[in-house]
Length: 271
Image (cartoon, rainbow, N blue to C red; front, top):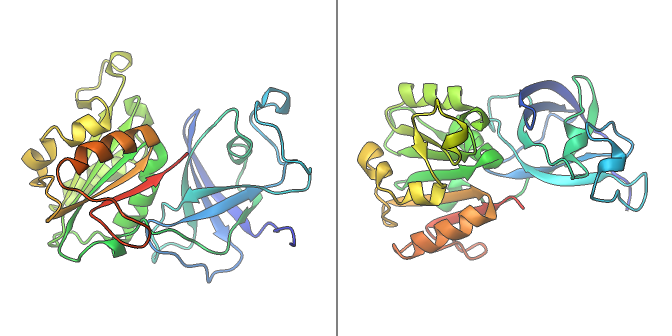
């Protein structure tokens, strides 16, 4: 099989913190298409610059120094109105790819798979169903694409984003989502942090997302009950959160997807 070649250029990078970044890339081929919520693959060669010295990397490099290091990442950009692809990335210091992605600068080249895949999309739910989008960390990325592409302000479908992070400064896209909630009466944003003792200025929701999800706050403030006949739930990010939330939701009548057969509970695990 032929070795993939670099086919995209970094056009912008926005460092949110030491461990979080928004990366925007432009593909050489403008015909790339995707559904909001899907993911694609990013890749770099092992000799690409890294923000972590190679000698400290716990994960060994690939067998061949010329074999592309590739990982899947959800797309955060709109599927129709943007000329670039956007990715919300978290640094994994002992990983092989993210330390190299975090070293990229504007103008640098990388590989992007020419095909987007995945079933984590609104196409899986009825047109009259509302959606609760639950994500930890960079698990917010597919929801940003969904909202940017498919949220109709003032429309009949309600959306709520429940986003969790350790600290308030780890809540990527917070300003955008707050503005979106202020401008769209059918969109609701619920940020929550899990380490409030380390973030004393925070006055919002605290705790693990699965607990916040079933606390009643979504029904009280957004009019979104955990009722599978009316509201579908999407879970993305930490597998521990996903498993705990699935168990709680299944007790309330939610059914997970089974392959291409859609249920009322949709999941995308990040590791």
